[in-house]
Picture 1 (tube, rainbow, N blue to C red):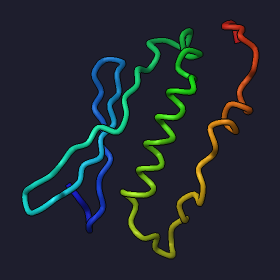
Picture 2 (picture 1 turned 45 degrees about the horizontal axis):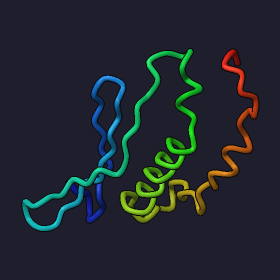
Picture 3 (picture 1 turned 30 degrees about the vertical axis):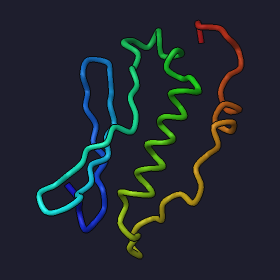
Picture 4 (picture 1 turned 90 degrees about the vertical axis):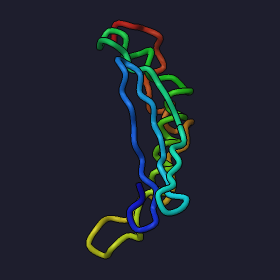
Length: 104
């Protein structure tokens, strides 16, 4: 489950639940699958506001960070380099609407 020594990100979908894993090879024919995050996606656009929470955003940032640090090969010259720094969670929240209206 590794490609050239790098781990692989995988996910499992069960209904509205997403579970993210990182799969690594420890030895010949020996792989580990480590859960790195789970979240529940909204079942409709009406409840989308409940998805954008600090907990969910932090988890998605963690999965993104693990992907860029563990699963990406050394960047060839013909591709874009991975982001040098992840957005801080506070920056993400500063971009969101501060109103508590669910009718947005």
